[in-house]
Length: 246
Image 1 (spheres, rainbow, N blue to C red):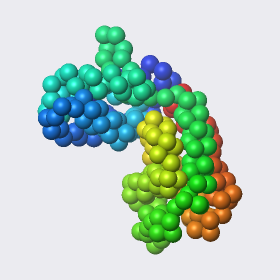
Image 2: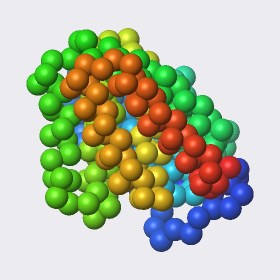
Image 3: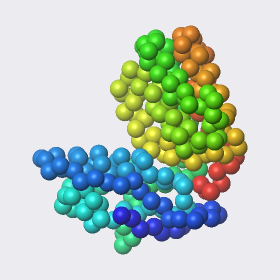
Image 4: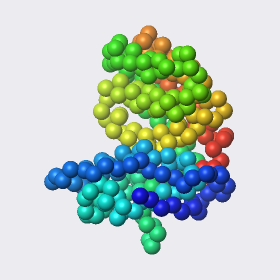
């Protein structure tokens, strides 16, 4: 469903054993809003893709996407136009359409923005979230109480990402959640890729437990500060160790 090409901007690409892949697509139902359904399907695919796990950029094939979704190329083109306007895709003349990869500086700025928004979400959650909703955050990490996160990185990575999405939802602010949608694609990809580096998984779960404690105690200032620092620590890690983004 895709072809790849080496990124011209990468100075020192990492060694890889396999080309990048995209999540599978399922055919969508024929309705009057095929463009909207194609848009939603393609955006989910881009969100779930490991954009930074390989040095190659991911090129989308319009014909293959059309076949996978079971629709004509017209709604695919319309959906791609919307995704390009939102900054998820870019078109290169005579080369094709690619999923956008950010530079290291852009990633750091996105994480810093995420830190500001998520810390405010945590602040709001201390007054708007129910006890049951906050308790749900602990359940995300139940299996890691006896098992080290490093021993189950794939599962922990999923729980880690779900945790940060949940903090946003607990703010009960639809506008804040929508505002982070475009950031989430890249911040998620970087969180997933870096969770195995420099013992970040163990430090991450310790941070999460402290954040949950602060939310349970309805300690607004502490919850806000812990969440902000947690994301800023990721920005520092990217600055120090993610040279492949240059």
